[in-house]
Amino acid sequence: MNIGQPARLTHEVFRYAGFTMSDQQQLHQAASLLQSGDSDEALKLLLSLSQRDPNNANVWQLMALAYKQLGDFERAEQAFQKALVLDPQPSTLTNLGNLYRKMARPAEAISCYDQALLSAPDNIPAQVNRGWALLDADDHRGAERAFADVLTQQPERVTALTGLAQALQGQGRQDEALDVFQVILNGDPNNAAALNGMGLSLKVLGYADEAVDFLSKAARAAPASSEVHVNLASALVQADRQEEAVAYYQRALELDPYNPDLHHWFNGYLGVIGHPDYLHSYREALRQRPDAVPLATSLARKLLLNGQGEHALDLLEQSLSCVHEARARAHVHRELSHVLRESEQFDAALEHARLAQQAAEDDRAVLEELATALMAAGYYEPALVQLRSLLQASPQDQSLLALYSTALRYADERQEYCALVDYDRLVQTRFVEAPSEFNSRAEFVEYLRNALLALHTTRQHPVEQSMVHGTQTLDDLLSRRDDAVVALRHALYQQLSHLVQNLPSDPNHPLLARKGADIAFSDSWSVLLRQQGYHKNHFHSEGWLSSAFYLLVPDAVNRGREGWIKFGEPGFKAREPLNAEYWVKPAEGALVVFPSYLWHGTEPLTSASQRMTVGYDVLPTT
Image (cartoon, rainbow, N blue to C red; front, side, top):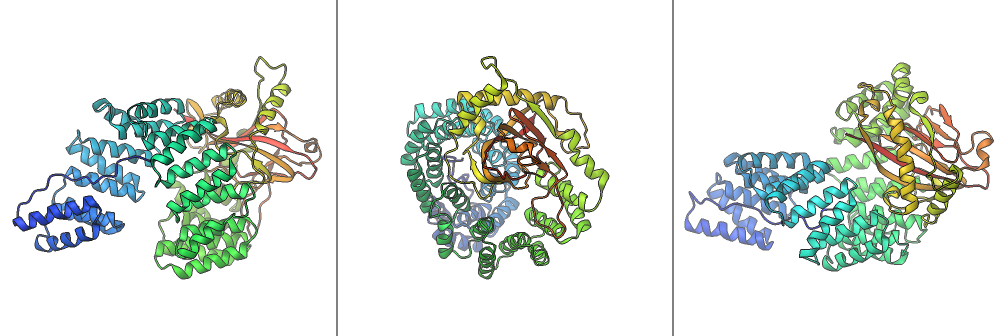
């Protein structure tokens, strides 16, 4: 979260060579108007000044800031570039970097800050903003170093302290983050960013009531912040205070009504508690803004997953009629391709995937959908070519590796396919060891099972997850400080670290080439499947290794393959569907470990029984 980071206007003292006194006064007036937020009037003055002296960099920089305030980022970028050609000042580079951050282009922002710091290494605003850009790029270690450098120069700079704490949060170092946030609060007890950060770290650690307290204070300190309100809602979810959670999600949406992430999180929660307003917020927002493509595509995906594919298609066709910008239309065509594929209209899906490519040929998600549509329609070699090209740019991307392995199998490239999936070598089963205070593994597993059952507070499965007919815990399970979870984390780490140490090294293999000195859990959850419960075929896009640890296994697993984990069956519909190739029988106390890019699911439970697991992803560390 980036609550509290600097958003002020940054510009240097201007040079006025070539201006009359009236021009100088107008430039000052334009700067004052920008500071007060009157961008329209500032822009009128600046356009007039630029006609009289088109080669003055200060005019172009202020014009860029005016366009930025007005939300015209394309013209703002052009004006900054013009200013840099005329006079490459560090302040202009810093402001352009700030614009790129606003445009969600962190790599370009970092480049601007680096250039600014080459000529002005002591420029603290550039150093701080570079740290925020590194956070935007999920480079939490780099951000930590950047903010630590600033704090050696200015130990009490609040924006750097806030950034450092968030960088620590991003690395899972919640206790250290709490200490830094507390330093800020010691000086300013009502600092919204620090209150928000304290609440988030406490929530991650499983201290829901304390998290609610801090986030309630943050909401009072920043009543116009949708981020704070949605964080408070999520803490109330963890505390199982459903009515209050719904109310704060609604307040967040009032503050930011067209934010697709807010609608996604809110409706995800409404879905698992069986709330009657599920998906209502999408429809209301689209009534006001029918051209809001991210909302339309998100709602269409949820409709499809709820068995309403025809409604999803109608919605997307309506959206297509409302938008004209090429990239927005590409996103609608991409989603139409997805819905049509899953409706087994493979030729129509491919047609929309090609239209999406024509409109946004450099969009990774569009090209990935095109490759999938090609495979689904039976065009295997073109799909393989497309995926090879994408993997060259992103060789560690788990979703691309999952699709690539499927394309290899379809194209009968057996040698490369078998080396990539290699079930016998890469899918492994291990059993946890019980801590000394337990008499047996079975007793330890029973203790863990009883503790985790209390965390299953929802009523039904989340539609966008792999599970069907059951419940899933909320938030990152293994980050909690409950005694049982701490013991579980240690038991799993013990087995996983030993397993990883014994993996062979292979610089040419996408899994084995990433082997590091240690491992870290990146996400985790518990799933309780009931009768007819199963996991749809899927992969884990954010992992390296993934695993299922079995806490409760029904006797039905001894009859055929009911409840077994299976590998190799793709999770998308196709004209020529592929079957599973490899199965593992679950056992209580066992963890099955496999590469995150492997397609996997489970055979459904048919008996009146339950199956309880802990799922998690693991990343290598240096």
